[in-house]
Amino acid sequence: MAERSRVAILGGGSWATAIAKIVLHNTPTINWYMRRQDQIDEFIRLSKNPSYLTATKFDTTRINFTSDINQVVGESDILVLAIPSPFLKLHLKKLRRKINKKTIISAIKGMVPDENMVVSDYLHYKYGVPLENIGVLAGPCHAEEVAMERLSYLTIGCCDRAKARSLAQLFHTTYVNTTINEDVYGLEYSSVMKNIYSIAAGICHGLKYGDNFQAVLLSNAIQEMSRLTNAISQIHREINDSAYLGDLLVTAYSKFSRNRLFGTMIGKGYSVKTAQLEMEMIAEGYYATKCIHEVNEKFQVNIPIVDAVYNILYNRCSPTLEIKQLTEKLS
Image (cartoon, rainbow, N blue to C red; front, top):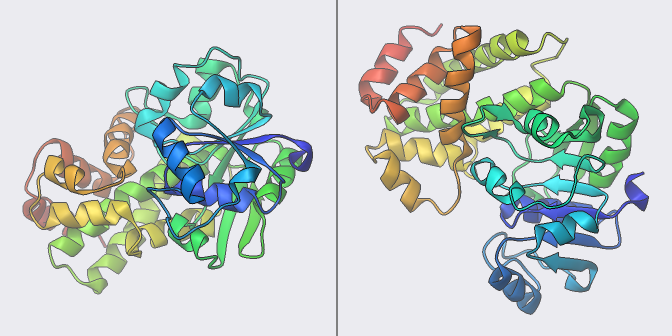
């Protein structure tokens, strides 16, 4: 299916750019939607994204660019969503074409703010996309390392195993290994939560907590993640697999992690607004913290690390005092 289909990338950031690089190994051409025409013009002129992963060159004769979301939807069979979650609604509101018969892959590791929905639910309930037509990309896979062709692992989640296997072929390269998984909700919620834990790790780093405490923090974080994902979706999952634990670890420790950087700035005393202004990219975990906090009002799962991050970011509690209180709840 994947090799005969017309594939579109939606989004103009670093992750969208990395995905385009991967997919172009396996398909002769792609369609690529970016919001800004000036970014497209510069991309064509320079043969690279002018704003992200600028060392990565592309053969632009193999890319059909457009700033018209309806055009890209109309001309594609598989849509890969790589738009930051806070802006997804804004882009999809421009749609005049049906997407319910498309295969849609969410590469968005965030929730739809205000709706408090993971992307698969949002596509299913708001746009009528059947669940078997929705896939998710998960796993420890920083865009910067994909650009450098460092060995990475992606998990393709879909409730239709045959479709998942077909989609996995689209993302498999010499430097990207792919596996499949039916646990779509678990993959999505863990991808959302690991950004929150990465902010927590950054806050603790900014407060000068050391590696010993970080290890305790993250071992508690994976337990929190397991408790909440099990409450939301009672399907068997191996929480220690790379799509869950691996993604948590790389996001919490890596120098490429924007969520860790955001948290470090908060821990060093920056206000939320100042930290957001100084960062060039979106820290999805900021929005995820509020979404998960509100989702958990229904489930009432014990997630003290998420609660601490929420209190710091949204209740303006002192990071020093909040993390000190958190240390007494961890083991």
